[in-house]
Length: 387
Ligand SMILES: Cc1ncc(COP(=O)(O)O)c(C=O)c1O
Image 1 (cartoon, rainbow, N blue to C red):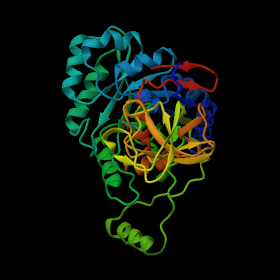
Image 2 (spheres, rainbow, N blue to C red):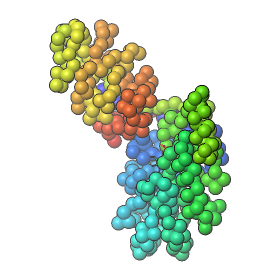
Image 3 (tube, protein in one colour):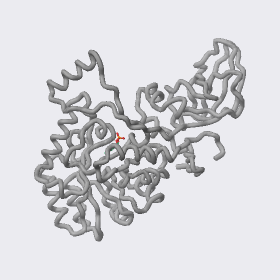
Image 4 (cartoon, rainbow, N blue to C red):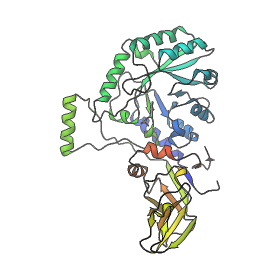
């Protein structure tokens, strides 16, 4: 690493997070770690830390992502959540990738190719997200009978994706009912893995009797999904909403002790004194209202930091970002305590990922997956990987 800008990942934290989650939600047989988008920006290197914690299946969104994970683990089953173009069937089979089937047409196309070895299949049902999956029960039933007729195809799982948390909305219940309707001709107890949850629905709802697996996403990376129960007027409003719409009960707070493992760092590469009336950065957008010191940091929007970031932390003190963030550099108003080569935390511990997400009017998913691959990931075991 030559440029002093990097993401630091604390692998043990991830392992401990998984143990903590599984310890609390211990009634599932399959814990499917969602590691798409470069393991939510952490880098695929961490998959073995998740497995050490108890994850026994992984999920990705493309064949490319699945193959990237195979570099680190050859055994763990990997489900691809999006349909893969069947031109690549031989690659799927060679790498033992579980495919998602989401339509009867796709099934027929697969059968025409007559796979020569065992292929694991999960069926995806569209219960309201309107993104992927079966919406029609007849097509679903027909697909299942076609799969069962073929000796190489193995129907291992059935799943759906839930659009909302169901905390203050009616859509969670609607989606669960739709799932039950669509699968009413199927004996779910004969299917190895029935998985509906993502992080927020896992923590906010009782396990459904037919669920045998759960997908873990953002929760693994340290976001507990605990939400304070409303009080006062908000509680009255919520209780009323639940009553009139018959919304099923939700669990609000949880006592999961999770930590984030991801922090973004750089260092000061230049410091200058500027005078009252001087400008800083592109477009002369920042005007110094007094004599001041400006530090230059080698990190910019090409590294994935957002224009709405406001502060960085240097020597445990917050300093304000001034001027527009450039492609590769950022300017910060500092004081005389800041020296050349001082270490800078962009976010992670002193500046939380949640606070960055709030300023961006977005969420932790965007913050984590937004840090680009030009920023090397450094693992606490000393390994440095550039993706
Ligand atoms: C199909 C599917 N399942 C699970 C997840 C994980 O979601 P979360 O990170 O909210 O747990 C995702 C994430 O986008 C997804 O697309």
